[in-house]
Each structure stands twice: as C-alpha cells, then as structure tokens.
Image (tube, rainbow, N blue to C red; front, side, top):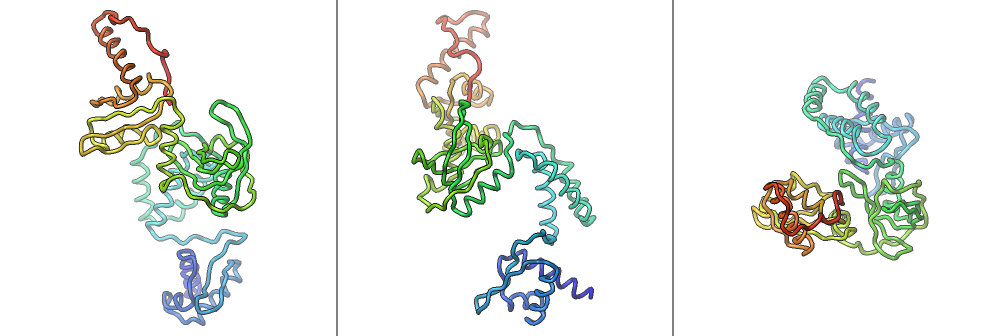
Length: 335
C-alpha cells in the first residue's frame, strides 16, 4: 500500500510538471508497465483528480482543472522559491492578497523540511522591504484581464483618467506589464481606433468580457519597452534628454524604469530620456544624482537650468541674481 501511494504521488507530480504525457513516457519515467500507469490513472480519477486522456499514437494524459486544488508536489528549490515569492507578495502592490499570502506562507512553512526552513529563515531575515508608493490593484481585475488576453476577447470597463474624468472603455487587451510601482494594460481602444496604455489601478469596475477579436499587429516588438516609453515620456509637456557622465548600471541604480529610459552611450556615459510637465522637477532630480551631466534637449530646459544656476550662485554668495528673474512655475511639478 505504501509503495502504491508513493507511486500515485509520483504520477501526480509528473502530471503537474508537463502539460501532457504519453503512456509509454510515464511508464519509462516511473519504471513500471503501461498497464500499471493506466491503473494508477484510474485510481487518481477515483480520488477526484480530473485526468483527461486523448486516444491515438500522439495521445496522452493531461491533468485538467477540477473542483478542488490538487496537492502541489515541489522539489527543494521550487518550495523555497514559492516561499520567498509569497513572502514578497504579502507586502506587494496587489490589493487584498496580502492576508491570503500570509496564510499560504504559514501552511507552507509548517511542512517545509528543516533544511529548507533554515535556509528560508536566513534569506527572509536578510531582506528588508521598504514601504513604497506603489498603486494597489484588485487581483480579481488582473485575473479577468489576463483571462481575456489569453482568450482573445474584448473587454469593457469603467476607467478614471488622470484629470479625474471617468468613462466606459471597450478594448482589445494584449498584455499586462508590471513596472514595480504600477500595473499597465496595453490594449487597442476600439472607439478611438488606436493603441492605449491603461493604468490598472484606474480601472473602476470589474472588466466584462465581450466578443472575440482577431489579433492585430502590435505597436512594438517589445511591449514592456513600449509601456516604459509611454509612461515616462509621451504623456508629458517636455521630452527631456540628458547625457550623464556615468555608466548605465550606476544610473539605473538611482533612476527607476518608471522615471526614465536609460541607454548606454559607451562604458562611461548614459543617455536619459524622460517626460515632465514642469521643468523644476527634472532639474532637482538630476542635481540630486550627484553626477556630471549635459542637457541635450529641450532648449527650455537649458534656459531653466541657466536661470537656476544664477539663483543658486547668488544664494551661495548671499546676494540676488543679477537678472532678477523670478522662479518659473514655482515649487513642485514632476511626472
């Protein structure tokens, strides 16, 4: 009986690893006969696991979705990865999932072998997560969107724009992109007949599936890069381009992908591109990097930094700038 139970667990684990197995492949992997495989498949079905079988030479066995979640059989590295992932998600930007992550983590920790429990505790104690301004998003909405993407179905939902206005959108969804601070949906807007990038946290209703659509050519080969360009440049008044005299990996450590796009220009120079509505913010941001830089565009930013340099020099000398120019736009601004 113990041998049979262990074999059933092994069979269930194999069915979870690969989408479909042929009978001979399972028999070879488990070192049993095909007849034993068929008999064990029947036992798993009796226990309630929905195992589908397709006939023919190219046919095989596939574990389907059922009313209950089957036990997940994980090796050491998989169990450690899941535990660390749950620990991270518990403090992540997906709203309402933190408590469920903590409960799942508690269950997993309870059954972790001692060798893994020690490794996991060491890793978790060595990592501290800072509070962030990440925008929370409903996990049920993300699930609904991802399902529609997989099924190629249109979605309709209420959406809140940046200015606070609201409206109903009908879209063809193509990709969800996580920037770390926010989730974005890349979709074809059916009413505007154009590509749009939607912030998932501004979707104000549960997305509803509509009719199937025929996929159209994407706006860019890399949708993640497309979203980065959209959220860091296109919606803003000024397209700021700066050359920083520092390696790109040094700049990337200080400038997140949600702030700007970075391109290496040789081993010791980096081109930064970002969109801003007001010029005060990029000036302060660049000064705070403590790196030499050269402004390439726009001309308004060059003029603004020139006036700011006079103002700062006068402040350091205890006087007033000779031009007497008042600050442009006042404090604040940014993306």
